[in-house]
Length: 88
Image (tube, rainbow, N blue to C red; front, side):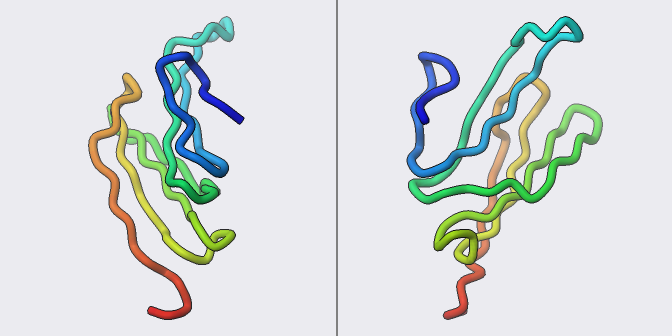
């Protein structure tokens, strides 16, 4: 629990992190993201300078599905969420 680096805040619950390391294992950058609920990563894809991550969050992973795009410096470009709870 807690931030990966001093500049980052823990969003709550279990967050997801994305990091770039050198071939020698040195950290280049790291970022974490999530909601106040728990997150579970479902997949990751890299295409050119884009990194896409899909995840499920909330209600122990039956609440929201989301997709986020990052660039290769770790900056979030966008994120989209879809409610997948049983009530919808």
